[in-house]
Length: 157
Image (cartoon, rainbow, N blue to C red; front, side):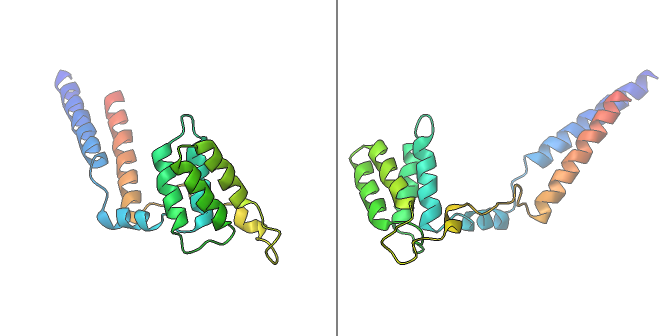
């Protein structure tokens, strides 16, 4: 009977080690490259992300700077007053994140001088999937869950 417990403990330890090894395995490179390609390229989303970085406590100035620069160079500038974004960049360059945030908020407001203004749908973020994993990542999650359950059952046994 005592030998059975030792074997069960060794099996549980082996399963735990295998699970830890599986969870620490690097993700496949194509999935990581795909996630990088999913970064927003439109000025509207980039301006929103800049505002979020500026409104964080404490403000994340490095992320705000990166997103603001990307917004300035975005090819799709629909729904954004790019002149205001340029003014925000100048204020940010003068170390005035408050003025930059105010300019960015104004850049998102619908322009009444342009024919038709901007569509309200552009101001609402598109729904995003919570987990956009690849089949290989899904498989790793299932294997990890099975190993955790097996380890728990082995320890309880």
